Image 1 (cartoon, rainbow, N blue to C red):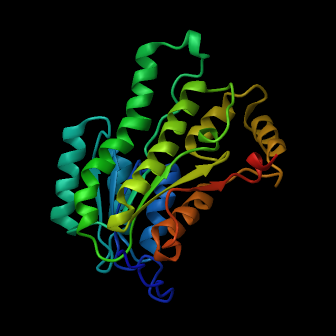
Image 2: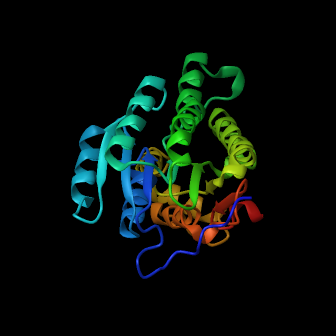
Length: 268
């Protein structure tokens, strides 16, 4: 019978001593997740293709108490993921936390107009990436201490439909169901799997999108705020706090579900 882990001591840090992998951890939501986990006591391995940003972040966060490493990883290539997980095992030992955050927006055209190669590339990053990282992280998680947690970064459009980027939304729907399936599969081993579904978050990608919007960034922000009942858009730290909860043993009785962080968007 699986025993629930003890509630963490907040004085020591909510993920004190836990070892984590965060994909797409060099910028945006991923960077905020890395910084938050480290601030709460975790040792973190950053997986990303942005080597300069990733190494600078790892170097800035590494201390005598917190090991932060960078790994140049293409999550769409199994050998790249496998080799990076082997390096994590060598540097950190086992693993307690995996955050599947790496993703791309992909083509925005409707289904009948999408270039198949562009669709395949997007699905490779958004769906095959979390699959490969989960596949090669499970052996390390099995050797982890105490509560172990996988967090898949999904989207509100893994829950509801929208015509603005149908291919992206399809990929996030796949991730949402993968999280549920993995949750059931690995629950007997004490490995929890949940999804986080963000609304509009001001990442570098959305900042770029906003600047290209008719009327510019201010018009884009006004339009986005109007769609969220709280009258605001989110910041990467809002998602990082949700990930921290799911990564910590405070969420020890949660698996196979979604944490929706969207300013009330899907409540309408």
